[in-house]
Image (cartoon, rainbow, N blue to C red; front, side):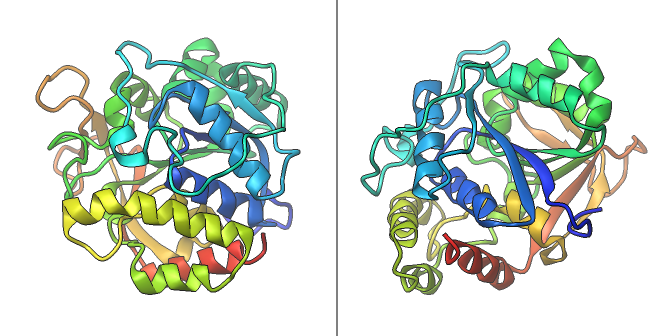
Amino acid sequence: MVGNSKDPMKIIIDTDPGQDDAVAILLALASDQLDVLGITAVAGNVPLALTEKNARMVCELARKPGTRVFAGAKSPMERPLVTAEYVHGKTGLDGPVLPDPDMPLQPLHGVDFIVETLLSEPAGEVTLCTLGPLTNIGLALQQAPQIAERVEQIVMMGGGFFEGGNVTPAAEFNIYVDPEAAHMVFESGIPIVMMPLDVTHKVLTTRSRLARIEKLATPVSRAVVELLEFFERFDEKKYGTDGGPLHDPTVIAWLLKPELFSGRYCNVEIETNSPLTAGMTVVDWWQVTGKPHNALVIRDVNADGFFDLLVEHLARL
């Protein structure tokens, strides 16, 4: 299914940019294997007014101003919004100085775009790539439950199990921000590929890897290096690593080259009630519950191969 068809794979990117989201969007826009039908912004790393603007700035950086960007949900389905300026800076894309976008925001609400696209495209042809909280997808499922059987798959960055959480001891940020939406998605029956912290923490922006991007010496590569140098400072201090994890581009890399990754099918449930573990992704890795599998949970990656893919694609922009 993945990467075999001659036609580009149709995707919608749902995102809250974020430096690592920006790199994921650039990777997708650089690929001739993917047809980006649209980008829907959601509140997450920073509020919606910034995430929709950031998505458009990244499209213009890639010189793809014809990409359609839609603003989605301003806040989670049931909770107050939690943001992460302490990681991403006050704009979400701190690091380089990027000009304000000229390309317009589309008038349609992001959730309506998701619903209308899934109902109008042939069933089983559109993949949802989720890089932020799952609010837009949860709202779309609430609005039109019949879309669940029309989605080819959801490839998401979210959750963590063996690595624990990154915003609480139990929860990864994207799931923590809107656990109710995540619960709806995991209960929806849509095929899910999950990129948890367990795999994203293995793709580190080391000095030597950033140097390879810098060597491309293009406006895009310079901006990416500045984005990642800002972004990694927080995680380097937190984890004591050379470089920080490059979370969201793993979603796009999996679509382009799934053989870089390995994992297993599991049952995954989302904790929504406990104050202690709200947003936890409870992964039945050892198959102890006997509950049906609802996600392919990725745990390992060929990190050098991942960065080869990234550098090769950034060179095209």
